[in-house]
Amino acid sequence: MAEQTKVKFLVFRGTEEDNTLKEYTIDFVEGMVVLDAMLEIQAKYASDLGIRCNCKAAKCGSCTAEVNGMPRLMCKTRLSSLPVDKPIVIRPLKAFPLIKDLVSDISWNYEVNRKITPFTPKEDCDWRIYQDDVDRVQEFRKCIECFLCQSTCHVLRTHDKKDSYFGPRFLVRLAGLIMHPLDSIDRTEHVKEQAGIEYCNITGCCSEVCPEKIKITDNAIIPLKERTVSRYYDPLISIFRYFFRKKK
Image (cartoon, rainbow, N blue to C red; front, side):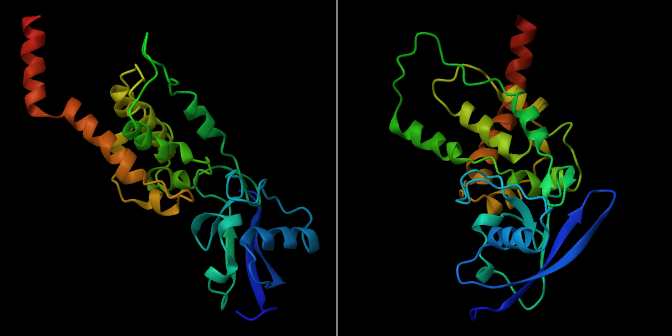
């Protein structure tokens, strides 16, 4: 892409009740990311443009938006990776209520987080664990809570099942707790009854948008599904429980 190429943007402006896609044109500069473009538009053409951003280094997770229909971190999306023969469309995250312009209300996620019992160590544990156990849960600790996985998940994005489904971000958190060898709480029932693991049909779209490359589907959700199936739907276990409870 030649230097000083003109790039057009269609940026969502307004609220749920009153909104429009407004066109802005800026000069392309080598290395520019979408957040650079939005801040330039804010500085030159629209001082009241609502944007949420902080670190500009893909670590705070705050500059989320939908770029050409795909949930992304604006600070990590280079203009050189996007087609510029037509306007680049920037919208707020679809899965959450809109506040203004590109700013969505993500407070529901923190309400869900409070429903999860924190790490509760076993009594009298010596705090020694194998490196393999550390490696297994360390991946989940990389989450920056950008909630891109939440917004791309069709259960939340299209069907709005926020009353019965926690979403991939918090299934990741539950997986990290369940797989931790020193956690003392049996969380499988919580995963099934409150987190709504059965709503996920493992399409893998959450893993695709994760900026930290966490294998959400393969390493978190599928193991949780396997635990749930073993606990509640395995016929041999069901027979054992039937006779055990009957005898008791």
